[in-house]
Image (cartoon, rainbow, N blue to C red; front, side, top):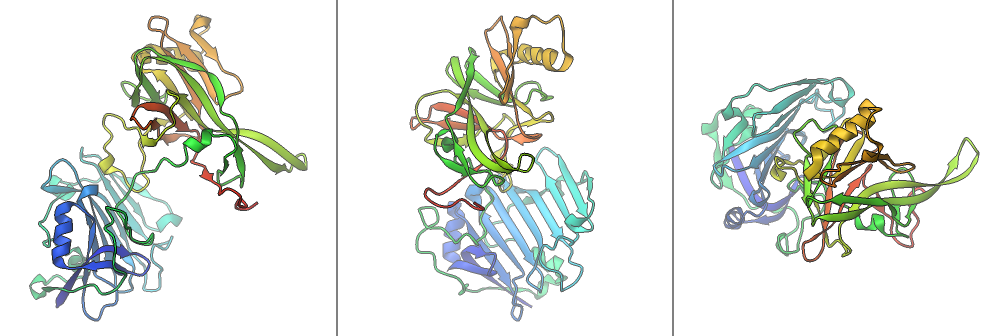
Length: 438
């Protein structure tokens, strides 16, 4: 049996076809430069490929799709290159078990098994025998080191996983030849310098992007949160200042079980304005049978500087590794009480103790100068540490879970603002156009 191998700059997931075909020499050059490329394995007489591999060393990522004879993807592997250049972590694996040839790809009822692994030995195995329509069993995978990691092969020497999965176990019968992928458009500009494959092409996973954070604090901007078709940003609401005498701003959930705040951002010692980004919208109220206008908070911000934010970055904790993030993955603080807080990290322990005494324990003997309840705001409570002058201000979110912390920087790279969305990221509405659903 002959297995043909072809190289291209991308793989179109919709058309199941290579995009930007190239020679072996070009692929070897891209591999050495760390640029993304794909490897396609196929056999004569089979319309669907056996498997497709996406290699992008600059993104610390190697992905793999395995296809069945019907052209459905049956296995997905996400391998990550971390600190050891000689091996790859099996970061994420999914296997779909289609119940018949007529079942559509990724059908909701398709049984599947998902395995998540981390370099520190943690991991999970989720088995869904009825797909997303039924229950799930989650266990801790008992895997040896050789099952969590795989050796990084040299260019052109990747093992053919689909050979085993498709029952093609007689590897001695394989004669690997190279073909030139003739399907798909030719890339006219290198994707690292401006050109890019179509949106339907497979690409390495990217972490969540900041979205229009600056615009959420710009009056007059029109947005939608997905539920309300049109909202208009109003003037940011200022809720006092936050003293940060230590020069280290903490952003965390006050119910964090760790030794300290998960996210810290260095800032010049000083006092910084606290703001809420708000938007006004109208809707039909069934209780009053009329139009109602209200203003909702979309985000909270510590305003550090007057310069506009030229860039936004997602803040990471000391143990967060961006190389492990999945598509749209996030870092941030985690809360089980739909609450976050901005605080002076230098006074974190006493400020958190005060917060717990006020809000959780309801200590009646507490000095009232040590805290302040904030009314009619997403900001809830302020606590003060007299010894240091540092303060903590808690704010509400609309749910539990992990909330990313976005740091805005000026053209000079200085921190100018720190933002937390209280819910999801709103979308900008085009100027002069009707909003969706309006």
